[in-house]
Image (cartoon, rainbow, N blue to C red):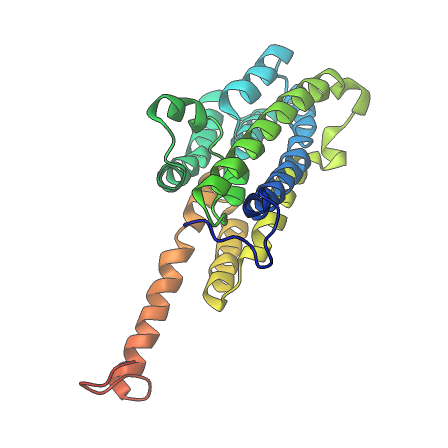
Amino acid sequence: MAEQTAPPHGGGAPDAPGTGTEKRDAAVVRDALGVGVAVGLSGFAFGVTSAGSGLTLLQTCALSLLVFTGASQFALVGALAAGGNPYTAAAGAFFLGIRNAFYGLRLSQLLALPRALRPLAAQWVIDETTAVTLPQPTRRAARIGFTVTGLTLYTLWNLTTLVGALGAEALGDTDAWGLDAAGPAVFLALLAPMLRSTTERVTAGLAVLLVLGLFEVLPAGAPVLVSALAAPAVLALKGRRSGGTDRTGTGGTTPGEGR
């Protein structure tokens, strides 16, 4: 999207043309910091939960440094805490993390980063950076949102993971605190304002029902993947209804008639 280059009415100061861009950048940074701080602090919950499941301090911190995808990390330590097989727990976490690959396909086009930076940026392709980046109107704003969110979240998540793992013994029963719900709750709060159309709301509602219905049946992480079927299901239903309307002549257009 091209920037406006015409001077403001009335002849402003020489730096006036950049004021709008600076304000937009500041707004993106503010939003990105808000998300990064809010979600990053929930790394404390992961540190506590991981230590409570029997992982060592080194293992807990390594998960946050190298894996860095909160839902997958919680799925892994949750399965281990429940006495699950380590390989099964790892498989569930892996399948839950697959969604980040689909995020990457979209973000790679939007950000268009230099080839040398792409492997580093891939580490930050997660739910929160995607939620902040996608709504941005320009590539510049998208890059700022992605970078600030990723850097803030990665730093805080790892610091609070360390603090949580060190302080796990002082908290006692970690399940009683419900800390593992902090991260998902923040992410849902980010997504809610983006559901503007009826189709989007119906799709989100169906996805929630699928997750809740399959939570006790499928392995950890699998219900989230199955919930992705809500999108094509709703679109297919919408297409059938539109097709039926056109065939009956109540909503379609006659030959030669334009919309």
